[in-house]
Image 1 (spheres, rainbow, N blue to C red):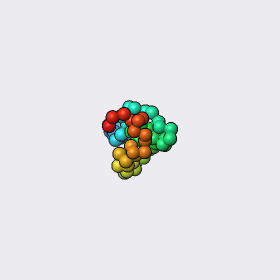
Image 2: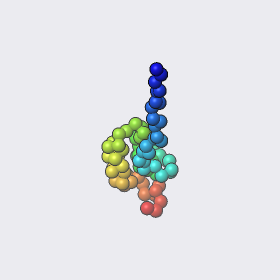
Image 3: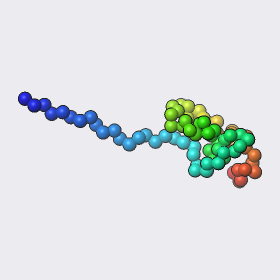
Image 4: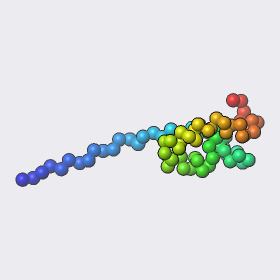
Length: 77
């Protein structure tokens, strides 16, 4: 008697990861923050390895980081 083996289901597409990236990738020397999203290089590089909670915590901080950058470098808000 032969048995039929059912292959495992194929995984769907990967789940999208929330990101504040706005495709303006210029790092401000004095602060070390990206002028587009206000994340540090360490945060940008490790973004995909962070948990949803860690990413959410960083994203909550981003608006206040704008104040650390010389407004002349940012242009109009």
